[in-house]
Length: 449
Image (cartoon, rainbow, N blue to C red; front, side):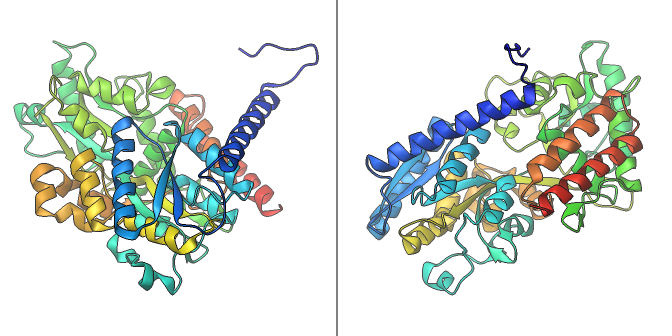
């Protein structure tokens, strides 16, 4: 709980002050780094690539940088960012707002691209220089991933890593209860989950039919969008904003709420604290039939000692009759700073990150889901990672979140109202109507700036 000082300050003002202080300290650190060595601006024979991740990922980026230097003679130094995604965004934003020449190239979460583009921080990658720089064309990537790097009709980012929602399921349990394949529709999934949940709870009282992300955060918006699009709805553009209230979206949110109500197939704590890891751990201990999660969970479910190793399958998420499955697109894209002192070399580095050899190596060494579509049909990759065959099809139909520079604000509005509907505080239609009204106001505020 926030403690009140002598002069009352609300939590919102305190958070803003903390955020401002953090940004200032990050900016100061980047400026100091820029003055003390590799951050110097101007055209020279070196570049700075900003990346984050676990030690194995950083080691892979070190090798990638060294290989690029060996091939081009351009030295690449890594700026190691925190693992936390929001801290990475704040650090990059601070440097770009200050018009620092470094980092020259950086990785962006797919949700940041519109904000960075609208701020004028990205160098276009769709000029006549593409041929000379050997940048792959848009058709080298899944359609949604390629489109995620485009803003205002300009190509501004290249997909390095892609993500999308998947349905994980227990192959052994479906076979035991006479189901030859995973469900196609949500109704089929609900029926399977109810029946098997009832049977399995005799031995495991914690067993759930379906675990997914329902806590009040970005993951909830992703889950909702997947169900909504599979019902014929979604979040279409409406002027400078998005349309939220629709019959299809109401139907989708009612389905999600029904999974929690009464003798539902999902745990009641879904709306209070179920995020990716909570869902994964519940499924991985053997206490769930179905799980919605990102591809990262595959390797963990199949690691040595996992109770569901060899028992787990993946499939597209279910859909409503008459509509197709939908998976929300996630991932990271490479962008070139508008302020780089060496734009030609920076474009070459961005292109190198999405070159076929690098993308293939990242898949084989890290198990990453590369941005290049052809990796998912590569025989060597499929021999080592057979589940890539299913991933390739799912990624090819992935759905992007609205490409708006103020998506963070709109997402926060959706999170609050969707979560209220799951908790039973609001009916689905009332929740979407309230979110729609707030979203319109947010769009009007942004448009008036």
